[in-house]
Length: 77
Image 1: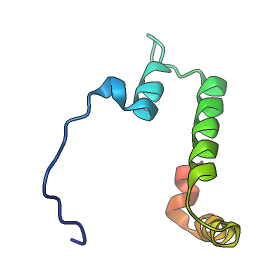
Image 2 (image 1 turned 180 degrees about the vertical axis):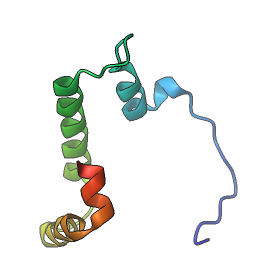
Image 3 (image 1 turned 135 degrees about the vertical axis):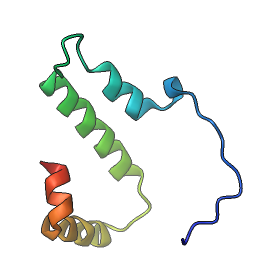
Image 4 (image 1 turned 180 degrees about the horizontal axis):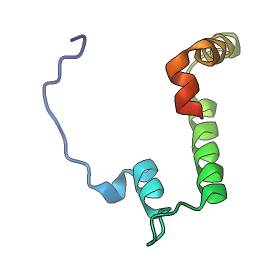
């Protein structure tokens, strides 16, 4: 493994905003408000992209590589 974990810290679910948001989007009948969920996910992704320490050229290369990757294609779907 390339990671050397020395300590783990418990983070309560209510402080894990992305997963908490996705969890709260599920209705009692198990359905997801698709439009609201997509909107919130897009907002979250945009905020991450805006703060990523990467040049525009490298970001574009990363996006193109992900568009060619079969696993990433399925995740995006």
